[in-house]
Image (cartoon, rainbow, N blue to C red):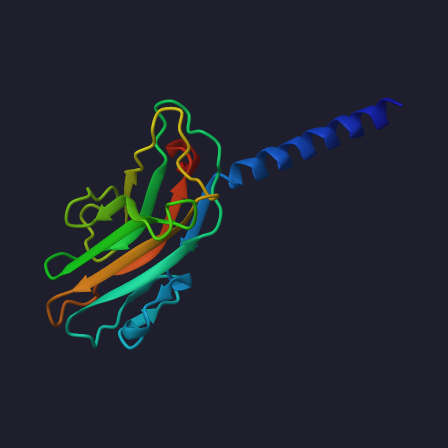
Length: 196
């Protein structure tokens, strides 16, 4: 009897851990660079790398590579007071002649919002502080920013809007290789959920 009770108790703990872990996953959206949709006019300048990243080909002297990532689902519950709903990205900006801009876009789809396009958050490697690999400009580094969410408000409303991440990789000097790149983008309902 004690053995059955102990097995039932261990099973209940395992199930609650799985439920808790799966509940947290719903509050994070992530995409690897190689899953992005490349603009039709830019297909000759991009390359998907074995690291999961996307970058401008080394043979391209200069240009802007436009990539989009559909954000299919995110939590619809209010953000905790003082929380940072965060846009993160692992980006490579080797310096002069390179720049990467990542924006979270909101597009209205009904009820008077039709076609209304708004940038909710932006990471710009020329302005946003680099958070990791500070002395390694040729490596991918982490950048992040908070979305402006009204106190007690919801950062996302999938009933009236759809969302996507718009990324631009820009190279303006010939021979600047490796050029700009994007390894991943991530959105976390709160900053703490992005932390390991």
